[in-house]
Image 1: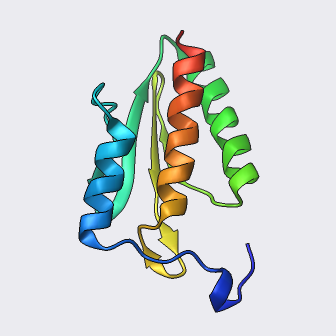
Image 2: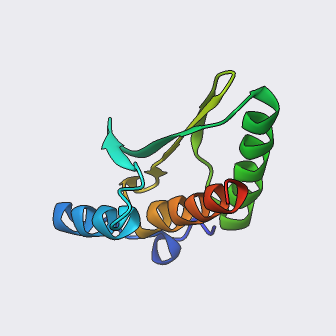
Length: 110
């Protein structure tokens, strides 16, 4: 992503964040929430190998979007948190990346 101001994603308004979160979670209540200013969700797996495979797939998605989340891993959980650093806050890019990760998780657990 370019560092020029015109190329930076715009911050979402509080109403925009609520609307984007509602759309992201949909009727299925996908589990995304805002915590400590970041868009966050914890994904659950059967074992460490599945958790690590998912984390590596998230890394690939992040690379495709040129937007990188904070992630924490345990034996059977991976927490992914998206937030834009410049400008600081939530942007459409955070929700776009979260949507890609949700699709990935649904595909893995189909």
